[in-house]
Image (cartoon, rainbow, N blue to C red):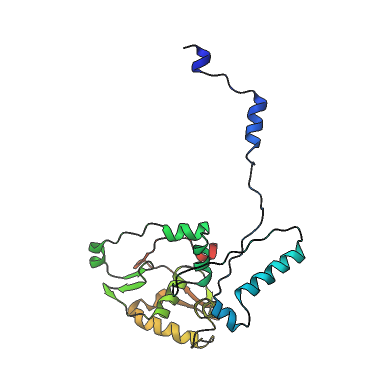
Length: 227
């Protein structure tokens, strides 16, 4: 075997440069995806339909940028699936961030540590709260309220944000800014001696600050505020 065969000569510099130019040095925006969380029932309640909304959006795009190309896909998901509508849509349409979050390996639970743990375990993946080794009897909304604050650790959440995020127009009992305080008070009463993990920021709203005796378990860590 000759040296020329064992170690082929490198391609000319011009060819190497041309090959590198085939891949852009950095990505460039080519469009955008808008995910809309809305089912047909909610659309009808608003006096419209998903099809009508799609056509209106496409019409607006055509008026703003006649050269733009558009494509609409309706997200199909099992009836009654839980979670925010927009998150269900993102997952159904295989949006990368939603897929990565949903497919993350669940955190293994160490039962020995559970039995020895005195304090608060907020288990996001299993939707439960354990206080000094006993499961707290939180309602669905109470857990949702606590989870919303936990996932936004250190940030003050206004009452109006809690209402808009956790209640929809279809809910029979949508609170106002005053009654949201009642929901928080009920949550705190069930947290017992750990009630101060939900802090009141006077004149602003509520905040979750991590304590040394609080353990949080979840399959994925990015805050929804980073979307």
